[in-house]
View 1 (cartoon, rainbow over the protein chains, first blue to last red):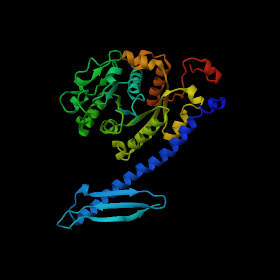
View 2: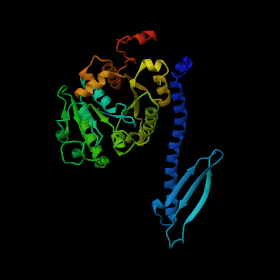
View 3: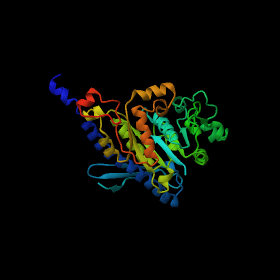
Length: 97
Length: 272
């Protein structure tokens, strides 16, 4: 180990600080999205429930964030005999960028 | 007017229980009527740190479920008569804690005490969310280390969304308690500095507790460090943090043991 390494090795705190700042910026927005998903879930469920009886667990909502565009995927399983099989819309709507 | 304070962190092993005991005892030493409540059901330890492990008969779960009266489960400290402990159950699991039951117990404790300090379990599961649920304030215990800071950030998010106060649109005040801090290593760039942690988490600083051998000695002996060695640097830092909790303005300092050789070399002085 050279003398230079001895000094360079010490400066790990600024690296920790930068890593945390980048990571937490990302994680805070992800947690915000979870709330968005939860709200969308409730509202979409309410709209569907007005027309057909649907099991809460049979409505799946997923948000994929891409660099250019994001996709919102809504998967609703409607019980027969109202409809024969699954109604799947994908992607239903693009959100943000 | 009683204050409910949750001591929380997300990450385990950062000093929640030690800090609960030390802050609770420091508040009691200042004349306040204090109860420390262990929410870590199944892995209780506050009784051990307080030196009351052989006096536990009934616990929080018994009271929540109505099998025991509040006063039967409260253990009065032998050193400070205005300090009590509500132990957690060691044999049950956290599912035995019900939301309504916890709310009722907290309301009853509010009648009897000035301060109700809730020691949260690690994690973000039911035990942790119930411990913070009825808090008026939160003490976020953080080590100057990446995983602890990340978990604290997550816990701050939960404090702002999942507590009764947050749901009512009220402000829950949050305070950072930086524990196991080594000023010399931080100065050398080997450890996150207080400013770094404060900038990342952006909550006000309650205190800085330096890494200290007295903390381990106190837990070995079953006494909060503020009772066991009140003159030690850690105890002084906890006592100052407790004063700030009470609303007193005390300048933040990093108490040092003595001006060590390295301390002198790097221009640090002991804070009397």
